[in-house]
Length: 219
Image 1 (cartoon, rainbow, N blue to C red):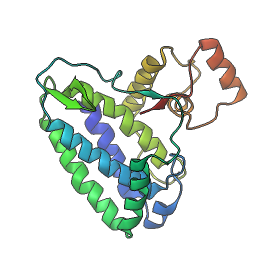
Image 2 (image 1 turned 30 degrees about the vertical axis):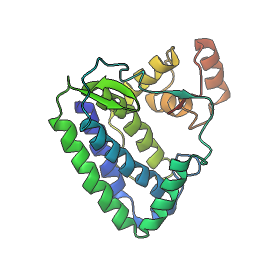
Image 3 (image 1 turned 90 degrees about the horizontal axis):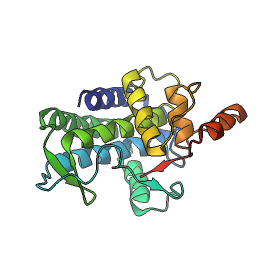
């Protein structure tokens, strides 16, 4: 629960630090500008609010790790929601409006998470999981998108919390069914492991030796 709050706060702080002109620069999400990614975060925050307001009475069907699906191929941008996100981001026009909307909805999502019962059960994506597991899954979401946000913005000061990076690496390793080589930093493991960066020849050899399946396209 604490890592959800810390990773989400750090991500929103990073967005607040981005100068207006940089909203038109590429993000680490292929085909998305920074503004598109920030718009996606608004939608994510809405999903958090909706899910926390959707209690479930049945037993959990997934946890923070099995919540994630591994897709067969990277997103192409042809998915209707992806296309809508790009159009919606462009419709904001002034980055200030997009930044304000994220702060408004994002703050509400953060407060709802702090007030939620960790042992409560919620329903989302036709699955049931505890609140703690749901928010735990989002630590990986926030951390990866924080890395996406600053991929081409080295001047943004706020970085993902180290604990969030470590937890996200551990979750990705469970999804992969193998540990990344010890020589990989948490950032390397997350970026290479999800296909956000291309491994060096040496890293590729280490990954083969460790029998790590990559890249993992999460959905």
